[in-house]
Image (cartoon, rainbow, N blue to C red; front, side):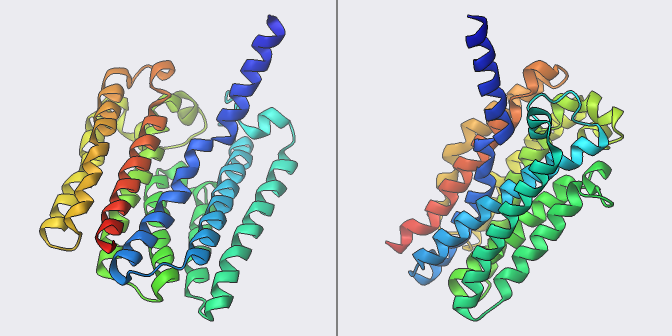
Length: 301
C-alpha cells in the first residue's frame, strides 16, 4: 500500500512537471492564426500547419525545461517538488534536453521558410525565442521584475499569430492582429494565475510578480476585468465587422472563465486551494481559442 502511494505520488509529480495541459499555449496560437488565414483565403496548407504545430510544441517544451533550470539557480523552486530539476537531480540533463527541443523546433520552422523561400516566419519565431529567454534566463530574468505577463502576451499573441498567419498567406492582416490581442490576453492570464499560490516563494527569491506587487486580494479583483476583456473585445470586433459573427461561439467558454474568477476570489490567499487556478485558466484559454478559431473556419465552408 505504501509503495502504491509512493508510485501514485511520483506519477502525479511527473505529470505536474511535464505539464501536458500547458502545451495548449503552443497549439492555440497556431490554430487561431491558421484559422484566420483559412477564413480569409479559403485555402489551408496542411503540411505547413502540421509542421508549425509540432515545432511550436517543441519550442514550448524548451521554455518549460529551461525555466526549471533557471529557477533552480535562484532557489525559487526549492519547495517545488514537481520541478524537473528537483525530480531528476540533474540540471545539466534538463538544460541540454531543453536545448535539443529548441533545435528541433527551429529546424521545423526553417523547413517552412526554406520551402517558401521566405524567412519572415523564422525571424518572427526567433524573436519569440529571444523574448522567451529573457523571461527567466540570465542576466535578464525579466519575469523577476514582473514583466512576464507582457512578454507572454507579445510572444503568444501578436508574434505567434502573425507567424502562423504569415506561414499560410505570406502577408499580414488587421484581423490577424486583432485576434492576436485576444489570444495574447488569455495566454497571459495563465501566467498571472500561476503566481497566486507561490507568493511566499516569490518574495523570498526577490521575484516581483504582479501578484506580489498587487497582493492577492487586489489581483483577484483585477482578474475578472483582465479575463473578461476577451469577450468584450470579441463583441467589439464583431461589431466593427473585423470578426465574423460566428466568433461569438467563444462565449461558450464563458462558464470556465466565471469559474476561474469565482475560485480565485474565494481562495486567493489560500495557496493549497488556489494552486489549481492556473489549470482553470488553461481550460479557459483552450476552449476560448478553439471556439474563436472555429468562428473563422465555419464561414469558409
